[in-house]
Each structure stands twice: as C-alpha cells, then as structure tokens.
Length: 504
Image (cartoon, rainbow, N blue to C red; front, side, top):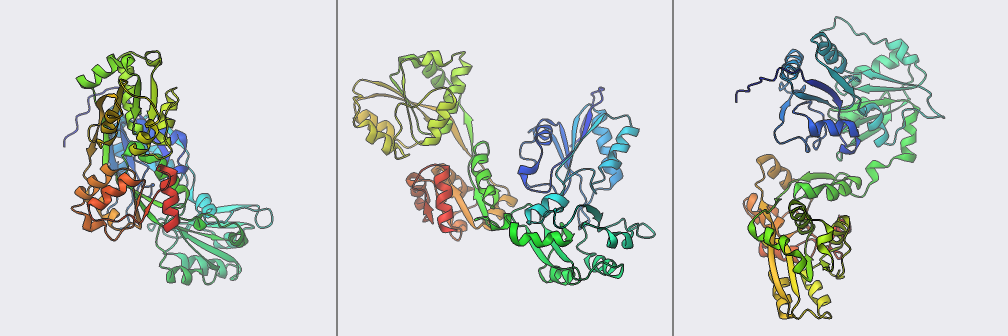
C-alpha cells in the first residue's frame, strides 16, 4: 500500500520504554502515548499486550532486532522515524525496558535532534531491576551490596576489542547485572574469575523476566554457564552476580503464584477482557487474549423509540453489563439523563451488571442471588407484575426465558435489542495459541458458539479444560459436546477465577 503524506507541519517522536514484559509495568505516560499515537514503531521484546490499545487507524510497524535475520537496520529505523515525523505524525518508538539502557535510544534521540525533529524520552522500567525483582533478587541490599553495575553481555561484534574492563568489574564492590549475555555466559564467567572474582559467588540467570514463562536458574559463578545450558535458557535473559542472589531463598514471590506458568485463554470481548485478564496475570498466568466476540451498540428505531418512551415503563431489566452500557449510551445520545428515569424500578442479573448500573448513578431494586435469568424470575414470583410495563434491554441474540417468564407473571414486556454480539474470527496465530493453552475461560454462551465456529469445530477444544461462568454457558459448551471442567458457583468474574483455581 502506498502512503501519501502531505502534512507540512512537523510531527513529534516519543522514545517510549515499554518495560520488561509484564504489561502492568508500562508507565501511565507510555501507555497514554501508545493509545494516542498516529504511528508506532515497536521492538521485538515488548510485552505481547503493549499494542492492544493502539488506534485502529494508526500505522504500526515492526522495527526491532530479530535473532534470525528478521531485523531492521538502524539506519532504516532512523529514516522511518524522520519520514513519519516530517509528515506531521505523532510517532511512538516503543522499546523494551528503558530506551536509554542498552536500547540505542540515545543514538536515535541524537539522530532526531540533528534532523530538527521534536522528541521526548519516556523512561521505562529496565529489565536489570525488574527481572531480578521478579526472581526474588534485590540488586542492592543493606547486608549484601551498596552498589550495582549494569553491563552489556553482548557488545558490538564489529568493535576491534572489548571495552569491558574485566579487572575493574571483578573488583567492583557490589552486584553485577549482565544484559543479553546468555550466549557469552561461559566467557563472562571465565573472564571474571580470571580477573579475581570468586568462583563460588552466587549467580542467577533470569529468562523471560516478569513474564508468565519466566525461568530462573541459580548457582555459583563458576558453574552458572553449565546450569543455564542444562536448563535450555534462551534469550532474552540477564545474569545477576553477587551475594544478593542468596535472598531469592527468602523473597522469591512471582514464581510461587498459583497460576504461574499456566496459559489461560480469555474469550471475552476485548473491551471487557481487561478485568479478567488482569486478575489472571496477577495470579501468575500467561493470558492468551482471544476475543471470540465483540459488542456493537445499536442505534436503530426500536432503540430510539424505547428511550423516547422510557418514562412510561415501570421496570427496566438488564441481563448483562453491555445491556446497561448500551442503554445509557442511547439515553445520552437522546440528550436525556437520570431525570428521565424517575419512578422506574431496575432489575439486574449478576453483581457485575448491578455494579455497572451503580456506576451510572442507579442502584438496582431487584438483584437475585442466582446470576441467571431464572433467578430473577424466582425473585419476581413474589412481586405483583400484573399490568406492569417492563423494558428488557438485551442483546439481539438472547435466551427467551426471561421475557416469556415475565409475560406469564402478567407483565407487558417490551424486549428491545440494544446491542449486537458480533462473532469474531481468530487469526492463525490466535488459533495456534488457543491450541497450546492449559485452560480456557468462557463468560458467555455466545463466546462458546463463536470460538467453536472460529477454530473449525469443538474437537479442537476437547483436550483443553474449559471453565464456565455459569449454567447457561455450561449448557452452550454441552451443545458442542464439551463438558466444562469447572463451573463457577458465583456467576461473575471472581467466581470464574475461583473455579479455575480449584482445578489448576
């Protein structure tokens, strides 16, 4: 595709550190810039979810250094940054860790300065501190080390000789942290010992630091190269040398989390997946976001008519968070607010739906203990609904049980589709990731149907334990011959997670 840039106003380049991998470690400033950028040039070692919030119309290009020849030359990256900025674009150069710590950010900043391109440097959490911390190794400690040295373990191969002063490093009175030095670890160990560093000094190698597949190997300086080789440690990894490594025995925390190393698929719509994905990551899981569905709010005549006559209803009922959001979006679009809802009672299915309603300033009058439509009907069995006008704000594809039950109770039911559930097609990469998962979570029946269709049949899911949020979702699984490995007793996100923890 040919790009046409005709904006004469100079743009701005942001050299942003994405952190070492855990998406929670990206700074607020960095995340905001990524979300607003018109172009993002990203490195290989950024976290997998770092690009989730990029604008749909943004230019997104890989501009990293790959280990197998899929690299961009630095001169090409520099030229592209200048080209985009001169076209008036807001450009984020997204780099793993911190852009100025072995990230060539200083070189790129100098090129931009020479070209007269405005730029900003946004620091990131560097792996030398973060990966060590996630392995339970403090790089400084009152009882061990008052200083820390960050050293590259992979110097420019074109340099005529090493610029590392091995005797000075061997004599350094503190912790040594080597970046990108896995392949050179035997040489690093040998040089330090020859220069006087104790062969018995504690050492650790941390691979994939701060990520759910983090791997840590500990030993002595003399044998850490062989231990790393036996453990099949691969880049990206860093090596920590010093007595601080002894603290890992006491303060190791990340790798002890209950879901550490487990790959869990989240099938919720991307806009809603954040809460579940965040909770799973906090428990140590590697989250595979595979949104099987998306949500589109409706703006048709039936929605407009329902909103125009909303004050005529005695009761408004919601079965989902999206029902609440789409309802209040339509209310706002009609230039109405909470004053139009005076005297109306509200009913919700599920605590999350009730909480979303509360976020809009309305407290649910009716909230059943069981977060299913049948629970709401049981609750209404004790309420006189004869002749009451009831608005059901639901999805276009929804079970008829609630509407039919309310009619049987004597209510005048107006069932209006306020939103559509769109079935999403996973790409090949997402499909392969699902196939390798340890668990898969479903928070709705529509997500079940969509995922089964997207990956070409339920047989591809039979080997993966499925965790269901409730009976309706479990019924959808069984329609495809899939028996849930666990079903939440509380039909909400926390209940879904509890069910997963029971079987992991």
